[in-house]
Image 1 (spheres, rainbow, N blue to C red):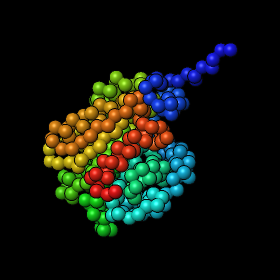
Image 2: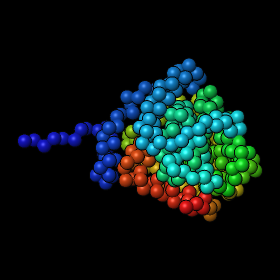
Image 3: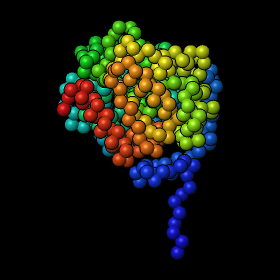
Image 4: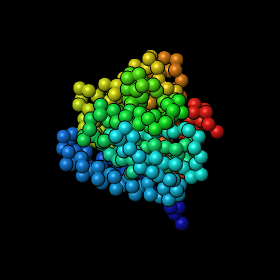
Length: 327
């Protein structure tokens, strides 16, 4: 009897990752089959794409919410909508984790990424406040980081203490989170106690080495069909190296919070992780680069039951617990 064969995958599936990760990687298709993103100025086409992405994100979040059963409350902070996510059995310790969701700057919302926020809340034992900032191209990069800063200021006006607040962003939300912290510092508004960046998009230009060398390895998206149009919807090409658009170009000598950067070795964005780590580390400030063998973009919530994801969440929890000083 001929042994059954594993299904063919467009993505290389290494033996060095967990069975859960191997199974997930085998499900991933060729990003060439994903339709191209609209041209930057085609508002109607972006709106249609955003509606499809929103429905998909809410469907992906639903089983996580059913499993984790967080308490979710709408808020308005500094004129910006947000969702407060309290984990099961949460007890108020005065600590808050502000979440800046990803989606290539052009997709999703606090509602459609609620599963990600709930995972972070449960894993870290913190209330999470997810900011529902305006997406590109309806807003550009300057306004988007302004909205994140305004929401954080709104939290402070409600009595939240800045030294008991951390910021967490994933994917493009990681880049936006880092840019918003730079903006807070530059405006002399103070900075959060810590920053966690998961698979962050830190340079919206394709300048990093791995944007080329890992192009065939990353199953997430393609720069020419997807990233280029999303970046141009977010910032004009001449503005894309502005630190508020691509924070890897920021000046970190003037201070920055302790930062944890997590990601996987399949990500075209890997160069950005390394470059930001080096830029912060060169100033003598605390930064940790935490990389995972064979992992794709945003693996922590895409493969939530994989041991690699559990390990990453445990490290995030330990990092936040140390800097926010809670048990």
